[in-house]
Image (cartoon, rainbow over all chains, first blue to last red; front, side, top):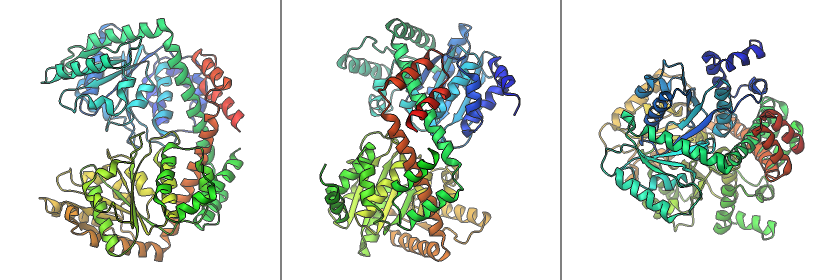
Length: 313
Length: 313
C-alpha cells in the first residue's frame, strides 16, 4: 500500500480513485481499514446525511436522482451511497446501470457509489458509518443514503441519517407500507412518489390522518407529492430537508442524533475488532479442538466460547 | 424464573410451553439464555437438520408441510423452524396462518414455530444454532429450517443444515433463481415445485445440464419434481434426503459439516458475549463521554472503540 499519509491526503483532496478504493476496503472488511480510519481521524462531518427508505418499487433511486438534480441546482456537492444489504458481492457497478443517475455520472460535483454490506465484519451497521466518514472526508455537502434490493434494513439506514425520507407510492398496500417496517416512527419527511398515478392523493390524505391521530411532536413530518421521474417536487423535498435541518439545529436534536450514532459506531467498531481478533484463530488448533469437543458432545458451546474469549482477552 | 434444572428437564421431556418460551428467549437475546444453554449442555444432536431455501414464491412452506406429512408417515417426529430474518418482531403466530401446516398443528409428533431473528444479538447466525439446540434437546428426529419473507439469508440457513434443499419453480427466472444467491453451491437436492405448471420439466433439464457442466463431486444433487400442494413427490424428496444422509455419513463429510458449524457457533456465541458486555456500558458515563468526544471531533471512533474494549477486556 502507498504511504498512508499521502493516501489520506489524496482522499481529502477528493480523489475519486482513492475514494472508490477505500469504500471497497469497507466492503471487504479489510484489515487495513482501522489504520486508515485513524489516519482520516476527526477531520470529517461537514456533510449532511439524508436517508431515503421505503418499500421496493416506490421509486427510491429515481427520487435520489431527482434530489441530486435539486442539490446541484444550488451548486452544492452531493454523494449518493446505495447500500445493498443482501449481497456479499461488490455492487460497484450497480448504480451505473441506472438511467436517471447516468446524467449525473460525469458531473464532478456528484459522486455515486453502491456498496454491498453482507460482509464478514457485521453488515450494514458496521459498514455504513465507515463509508459515510470516508465520503465526508473526501468533501461533500450532502450524502444521500438509500438501500437497494429487497426491502430490508430500512430502519438501519434511517439511523445513519440526519433527515430520513420515507418514500411511498400509490397502489402498493398504502399505509401498510410504512407501518409494517416501523418506518412511520423514523420518518422526518414523507414523499408520495408517482403522484400522477391514481390514488396518490389518497395515500397523502391517509398519512396526514395517521399523523393527526399520532403523538404530536415538535416536528410534524410533511407529506409531499413528487413525480421523481421528471423531477417534479424534488425542490420542495429539498426545502423540507432544509426546514428539518433548521429544526434539528435549533432544538439541539441534531446533537442527540449524532451522539446516538457515535455510540452505535463505537460499539460496532469494537465488535468488529473482536471479530478480527477471532478470525486469527480460525485455523488454530485451539478453535479446531473446541469445535471437535462440541461436535463430540464433550463440551457445550458456551463453555467453548468462554475458552476462545479467554485467549482473545 | 423457575428452578433451572426443572426447567431443562421439562424441555427434555418435550414440554411445548417450555420449548416455546425458550425460543422466545432466543428471539429476545435474553440474558438468561447462556445459563439455560449451559444447563441443556451437550445432551443434544440426535436430530437431523434439513434446510429448505429458495426464492420467494417457489413454495418453500408448502413443501415443508408436504415433507412433514412424509416424515410423519414414517412415524418419525419432526420440528419446523421458520426463520424470519427481516423482522425484529416475534413471529410466533405466523405459521399458524398457513393452511397446509394447520393439518399438522394438533399432531403431537409435530412442532411448528417461527422465529424472528433481527434482534440485537447478531441475527440469524447467532439465533439459529440456539433454536436448533433447543428443538433438538426437546426430542425430535428431523428439524426442517426455512426462511420466511423476502429471499435473503438463504445461504445462512443452508449453513445450519445437514441436507440443504433448494426449491425452484417454473416461470420465476429459471436458473437465475439459484445462481444469483449462490444457492447452486449449497444445494444437496434440487426440487422443482409446481411441477404441473408449464416449464417445470425445462427447469429440471436446465439444472441437470448445469450439473453436467459443473464440477463433478462425490455427491451429485438430484433434481426432483414435486407438487407440494397435494404432497406429490414429497416421499421421493425424503428418500433423497436419506440417500444424502447416508452419503454424508459414509464419506465422513457429516463430521466436517458439523465441525464447521460448531466453529461458527462458538464464534457467534463469543461475539454475543461481547455484545452483552458492551450493553452494560450503554448508559455509562464512559460510553457517553466517548460518544461526545467523537461528535465534537476530539476523538476518532477507532480510538474510542479501543477505550471501550479496554474496559470490557
